[in-house]
Length: 115
Image (cartoon, rainbow, N blue to C red):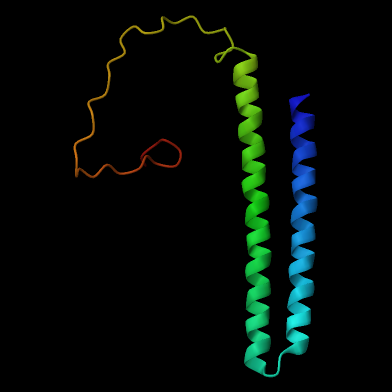
């Protein structure tokens, strides 16, 4: 059921993005039509490209948010771990020391592995 909700939300976001892209292209054409010089036409084109890119990025962010919501729903629905794992929670866990002020800590690798 959650997958269907996710698809519907993605579809709605895609329609919104498509509408914004179409509006950006229409405003670009109108701006280019009223431009008096070649430089103004190029500027209108660049503005249009920026608006299209912003709409696509917003769609990407919305889809990521939908995935996150779906994952949260699955985690809360199933109690956080699925209940199939048989290891002792809390045994052998040591708290990490607090970060030192001014120390550089590189971000973790994208896949969690250092190659």
